[in-house]
Length: 177
Image 1 (cartoon, rainbow, N blue to C red):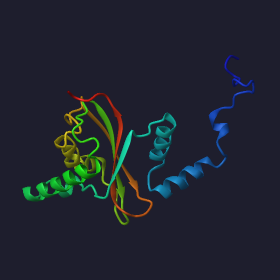
Image 2: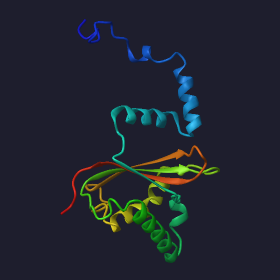
Image 3: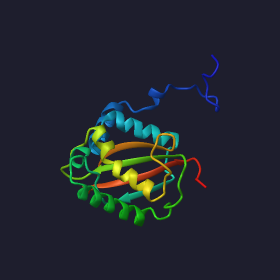
Image 4: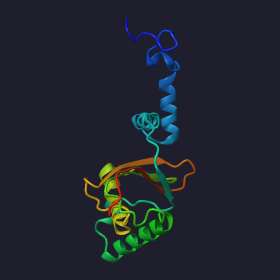
């Protein structure tokens, strides 16, 4: 059979034969330790295998609020949140402020603090809207429309129990003129 040998000449073993016998138990324990689902853990490992490491990573000690908490508030509360995010972005991400990436892929991770629960995905994305708008206002991205901006939103349990937001620039297309 063609392809049944490795370049070194030894017979190929199927992927499952290379895994430890108790792999399902290991995946279950590792997912529980990280506070994520088993499928999220496997997707994280797959990203690491494919070399999907971020180009740049920023850790901001500010928690993303649920869209349910932010939607029906007074306009001054929205302004205060926007100003807080803008100041944090101006300080942490000053190296890329003004770059205006035409096409870029990002990953925003809400690190859950002690005693915090996960948002459903719609509330997570809606809660990140103010943060994404600040990326536009600080001229880091041209626009938050799908042809210019792509983002993966995640929630992970923090190892130290402290809530924070991790913003990762995964890939860049080009800078605007």
